[in-house]
Length: 633
Image (cartoon, rainbow, N blue to C red; front, side, top):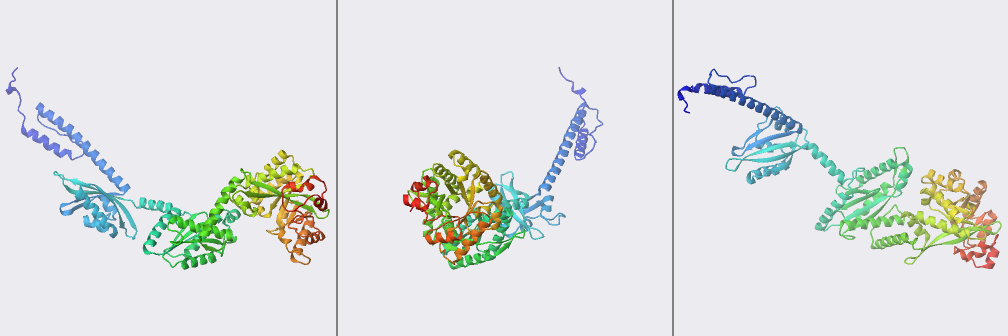
């Protein structure tokens, strides 16, 4: 079919131009205006319809774009993000409104320029910023940099800048766009976290990690300069008693005061650290050694010895022990140097405390011997290396044996016969006194239950056993399993156990006494010897320490003390046992003074129980009968 061209109306060019003009005008306006035409031509009408549809799309796009821009500006404002753009040719620079606000130019009085931007930065950071900028231009790769800006108050504000390249049609960088965000708060938080990771939160001193890190650097510098370094390791003597008596808050006050006193004596170049508990370290670099370290140690001893007033108005006296080691004389590495100073501290604490000592190789041998002793002591119980010996106790008036005190002995295949005054303290410090004390109690009760003569058996218990809280249950179980009558058992305790946690100690002793077991205060006269202690708990017996018998004679001070204690015992209706009796003269004096019981080498040295058969088998055995049947010594 052939279309007749004459029947198709002609489209006027002016109609199309008018529609295009309306579209361009209305596209940048908001409103309800539409594109219209006077032409009735169907093609023109379709063109108008298409134009209006495009106009709607364009308006929506513009509206969405404006909303996105506003939202982005809001985000930038909240996040404190600004932007800038530098065209390389001519360094033409533009800043966003947020960028002006970031640099304190809310009124936009500063003319944007790259030089202005760099001049705002701290001098120390300008070179790094400019280097990053040129790197983007030369490599075409993005770069980030952190820089400081000094505000009006002179404080540092930190900014993070991300620089991105813009490329022309040939792929060359023609501009650099920067996104800038203030990170002062984030930087401060990071620094706080970093500080906490390297410092003790209680005192503000360096912690162990920071100490190790800094000491490595100090030793490297000392090696380069061929100088010596001193490390002083120290802690407070008896600090645990502060926590026990006044609470941990008071202990914290003491540690903070210790840090303050340290700051008064060390130099700015010295490193001070708290490495745990009441342990402190001072690293003294670049000084004349050993004179400088010795001088500091003496000043610290004098200052720490001063009293301190706690917040609760309690006044306490402190002392410290200090161990010193020197680089390179004593050690070449940080770990070894700290270990040597700690060895010296350990040695001086064992030697009497409240003093200082420099490291000596002899200390290392003693330390290793101590550690070996501790190791073997932990295994001694299961290896069956412990035994009991027994020392008889005599009634002074009747001259009859009343019972025995069981004494612990350790015969090690490695160390030989180790004295009790050495291994008992170690056993308490390494935490085995509980099971070891229970073994002693069970063994002694088992032995006493076999005797034909129902004598008493006295067993010493450690303050550690009492403080653990289950001693009464242990005693009850042992009495039941061995069949020993409770009245035949005497538990000997020292007054020191009532000083720390007295309520717990008294509760334990009362529970033991309720079983029918007798409680004796051992070593009376050597500790606090407080009458308040005797009132706090109804003891069944007092045992006078052997030190008062050594020089006992008529008219001596020891005799006056013995008479005073015996008079106290009579007044409180407590029998008194005097230990350490070694001569007949001492025994005669004690009888005249009215001693109730005696114990010592004169009456029998500590020995295995089979050497005392004459006493354990015959009721009412006297010294004469026993001596005629066997040798007690």
